[in-house]
Length: 232
Image (cartoon, rainbow, N blue to C red; front, side, top):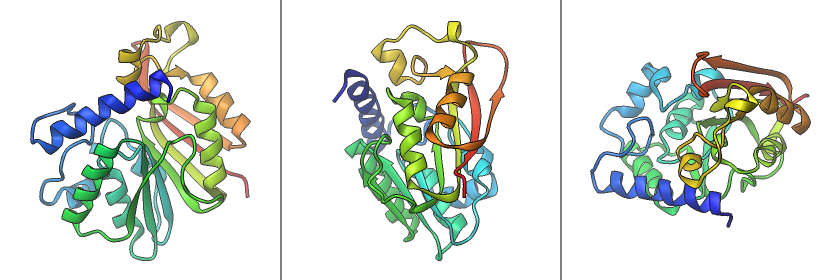
């Protein structure tokens, strides 16, 4: 395991342990146990999820199969499962055992059955090729060391015509990219890449209809809504 991946794993393992113990972790992360009615609240106000809005971007339809890359405590997965209904399914993939345990506990509490949490990396999801309709992610791809590998694997698992809809962090330009160090990478800063590089990597993976909408024009690293489609 690379130093960067291990730093990310340790950071989110600790966040999951704090949440399981009932202490507060990063308020911007979906890392705690679900309070009563949380899934219903998230369905009513999808833009409040996490640090981004992947479910709003995805426009999920009943019967679709969804994959959440870096699913953490599972909030987006459980809401997605509600949105696609009994005829659909929502998968979450995460590499951190502690987060997977938290997600399982949240799923049990929610009573949602059309969701599954899988251990794996976002560079190589444990799902067959052309098996999902939509790939979502909430501020996680920036944590990957090899973003090209993540995007190529997302393309692999999508069916023809499938949608890629993620919230992520991007750098406004090459010069704005922070100097890499393990702590800043694990905290979603140093791993952010420039918008045009992100666009290029999506194209190289095979995606079309790429759009990257940046939220804000100040600061070195900003939120972005990223959409793309796998050709039919």
